[in-house]
Length: 640
Image 1 (cartoon, rainbow, N blue to C red):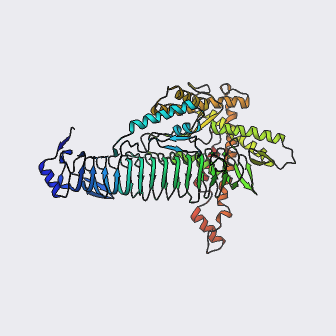
Image 2: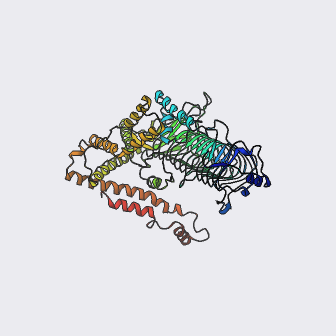
Image 3: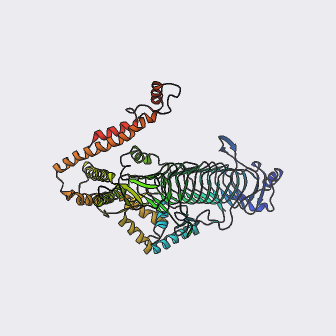
């Protein structure tokens, strides 16, 4: 092969003096710059290729000489200026990239026909099966969602499986890779694992059949005592501190650690998983669980935050653990919350307490679901104007940790969108119907497994109506301000109903069109799939505008295109009032964090004055709080 040459007799003698051996030195080839004095106590077996050994590598903060020592190499290719030392078993069937470090490893082997975690089937969402997702390096949250949640499209599902099979066949190899500049150190066993450029695997206990994707600017890390089998870890992610993974996909910018354990689960962009455990979980972007006593099981999650002790049951001791849950984007569960599956939680809903009945609140978003004396009570729209909801909408874009060159998961962060506002419209209509048919003497009504107090129905209707109007008017005035005009946009698609496809919001018509093209074979590669969803994402604003125009007309009877200057002025005034009202409600919620109850525990060795002073020293003043000032500014801008 070009660039390589046979060893000279002098080089062989030098290495033999250094304790090296080989049954056939003619099978060891080297590049220009190779230095036999830097090869000590190494056994060479099979076909071996060695690069230059004349520079240094940086490891653990120190510059160490490139060298090969105390190792047994079998059918390996080592790049320029690597450091391979203290391999206690053997290093077999690996290509080690330039400047990489492999040190203090028990054994590191690639077997024939390895796929490095690609093609492994993850039984997410439903432990009983039926929603299987085959992992692969280039998998996006959209691919996994369509594959698992739309199984009723059998032809499409078959085509998606064919795409994965083709991808797996292409990357299957008898040789593993440790990428340029990667570090593999202090690991007991590595079997059939590819390691990307710049990745760090330091202190892991065992890694089997997996891939650690990594690149410049988005280096991944696998740390102390990690045990992982049948896995893929995407670029810029961290799996550390005793985590245990089995049949898991860890997406870009994800952090896993503190003894978290997971099986048959997927966690996509920017998720955080610590202390607890997961089983059969589809964790869409920003799925967060931080607490030791938390179990997530058999569910679909997205933009989700799990309180400590969160738990679900998916087993009724009849046909096995076949029940599944859906927690739509923005949902949260409080400490020690429990849900009996199957259940479904609407967008941006907070679940508190132990819920022993199956429920479906997807048509009542932005609500609180609380257990009282064994019953599940829902307060519609209660979460619309809370500080937490506003902060969530602001923080998610700022907390995107992905720095890779290709951000595979397509994400829409909008709290208010056709997806959530259409749900509010459903909720508004539902609450009106319940109010109209409920006698005054009735304390509460029942709906889809929950109870709603009659006294909160009107409040929920008004809250939904105000939020809907504020969204529609803001989008109309935004178009005017941007000079885009109030007419249709080229290429727009209208659909009354939208979908949240693994974090991407899009009209269901557009989703159905993509899925039909997959089923027909028009989209027949992973690259084509990703391109189709990228184009759909790029049409979000146009499709949203088509939805806003239609909904405004249906709601008011007026066509957006016919709005006059006077009409727009009236809308601007109305928006100002709506925004000011919403800001006041959020500020009132935020002010609770500065009330007397919030100050309990401050000034422990003094009186009331010391407590107040201690609170201000730690928490600051309400008026000076950055969030409070931001909300006051939003309220004062009104319709501007």
